[in-house]
Length: 439
Ligand code: UDP
Image (cartoon, rainbow, N blue to C red; front, top):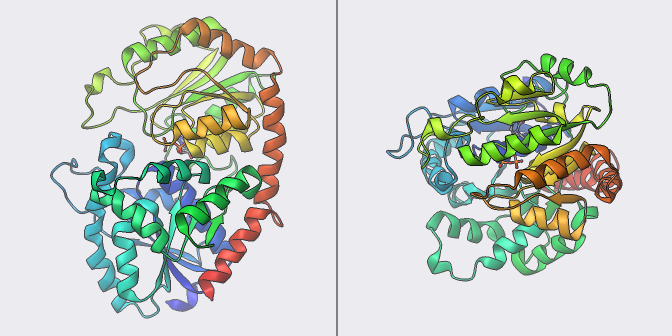
């Protein structure tokens, strides 16, 4: 069956099973496939459907290798995606997936033309790096982060003894691997990219390949990215089309991991209601194994939706985020400042209002709010209850006034797009990466 595939060298891509990690790596995979690499993507059964846009766009060059998700007592049966679990399970998922090392080694051994390199998520270095070593091939790490965040993260890595083994392995295997690919671009943070190379990688092979332009696989554009929307994308678009003024709608969405308490939801709902803005609010399904009961998570105050009918749209479960952000009616994104969401907002030229809550959100927010001055901070902290009066004012101002942050967003957005399109810095860096892998 080899003749049905691309002619370029064969590589294996191993994503970490969380939307914030997997989606950008699949976007990159699309770029690699367009440059004629032959690619196998390793996934577990529940995640196969996420590859739909990638596979349909690259039927000859991308294929899947599906291995069963290894069972583990603290991961509920049937759960294969971090999206359904609290963040404390992050490292556990990495170590559970390490059980795939052996079946994968056997797959390599019996393959007629096995991959010549592995590109795997940073979080999976503990087992994909030794696997590559055993096979005598190169491993490239993929970080869905920017260099600024990675510098902060690595800067905190001072006492190896205190780190859980999987995290320690991540710190160790990243510089030992052949190279590291990150979701950033030179024009955004040249200095941090240089610092990360010199201080933490101690070699030159860091490729900034972002931001990823969406895979256009259907008429509405990227509507199936990461899941199926609970409201059909065409309906969401119809609703947005009915909002006549450009930049008049606020999109509210805190990514694939954040779960909010009743009090937090009440405060946001009050702020939104008092602001008078039109909005789309993405409300995530409850997590399993969380410290909050499922019926306490992400609950909208009663009567809110009825009162807001016509003015706002609530989307439960999963939203076609990129399509929403890119609609001309949407001008503001109230976000947790997860790195993908932040970049998607930037590419879509919307004003970011940020509420950093965990992980790298704080570093991203610092960069966007303090250094680049393209975003406005609403509040911070996972358990924080925002002040609804302040929130209402910020939301209302965002659609009625032209803030300097919005003007600067436009300027940086242009640089981001220029980096990603043909001839741009990230576009060229992907070419260099492909040359390096193929060498
Ligand atoms: N996303 C989406 N629909 C949703 C929620 C999230 O398409 O309803 C996508 C979003 O566009 C982004 C990714 O999921 O690409 C989330 O990554 P991010 O780094 O922003 O945050 P995380 O979910 O990792 O906290």
